[in-house]
Figure 1 (cartoon, rainbow, N blue to C red):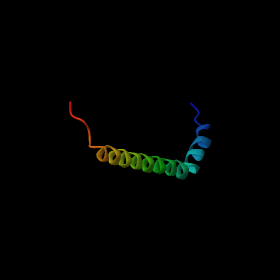
Figure 2: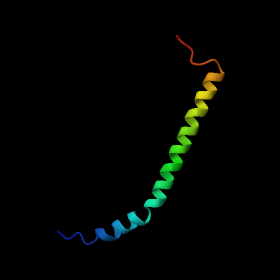
Figure 3: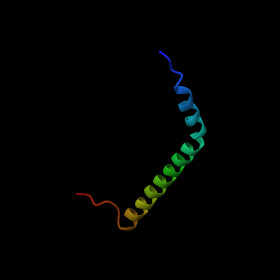
Length: 51
């Protein structure tokens, strides 16, 4: 088998890895912000209702 065609794929992945990490970091920050915001809203409205 000849895997000569894989070299350009590897180069593209390595060139764009910094952008991928940046997007991952932004997604984690947004998720954390939403989690803390929802927690604050739930606490300010009396917490979770027990049934």
